[in-house]
Amino acid sequence: MYDLIRKTSTVLPEDVTLAIKKAIAREEKSSVAEQTLDIILKSIVLSSKNGLPICQDTGTVLVMIEGRPDKSIFHLEKSIKDAIRKLTKEGILRQNCVCPLTEKNTLDNTGKYVPQIHFEPVNGPTRISIMLKGGGSENMSTQYSLPNSKIQAGRDMEGVRRCILDAVFQAQGKGCAPGILGVCIGGDRASGYLIAKKQLFRKLDDKNPSPVLAALEKTVLKQANELNVGPMGLGGKTTLLGVKIGHAGRHPACYFVTVSYSCWATRRYVVELNQKGEIKKWI
Image (cartoon, rainbow, N blue to C red; front, side, top):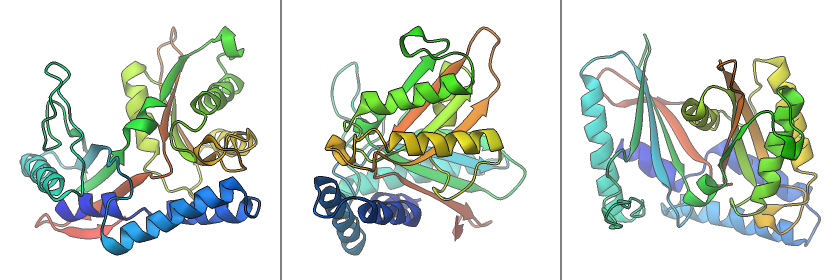
């Protein structure tokens, strides 16, 4: 768990790095957008080379555990918390947990419901998914209830499209654009946010198995990048690096569209463990 979380904080996933390189080539030469993205890329390289956090905000730790329900889950939880405390002391993670009652920082990145650990029972090998999500991007995450007359969004895919683009436009550069969006159509107010975050674990070059959602992802990405919000909101052709959309069953009376906004520093890795609890492979 120490190795997994450390790498997540210091080495940006290859698919995200590649998307930023492509974005640099897409922007006009010597433009503010190109220069901004170039600085981001240099920062990514330095972080990986020197083993330093990719961003000064090392985010909130989100953990998804998939595996057979047995007592090993308790060992994993302890290992994760021990690793977080050690990495916080080393400065690889920032002290990002504050008690809202006392307004005091816990100083070790753990606290009530922190880190967030979700367990999903599956009949297969144990997989651990880790995401470090910054507070700035989390502030730009949002949820819509359809119909929404303000943006003329009805209960259909066109309404969903309008919601996602509105979320991008409202965020401007405040979520540390270029961003990556995880979206959930349906669900309830709680499940929508979790499912939307889970979409962020998908690689940027994958293809949605649903033709309807695959088409919507492509359309929203293209249209968002025509908004001229650009890197850090300073203008340009790259406002988003990717859009990943999932869906969940909904109550007939409810139609939610939930957008989890992630910054360019989308830090997430997935590993599979062997019987001894060691990393068998990186996924």
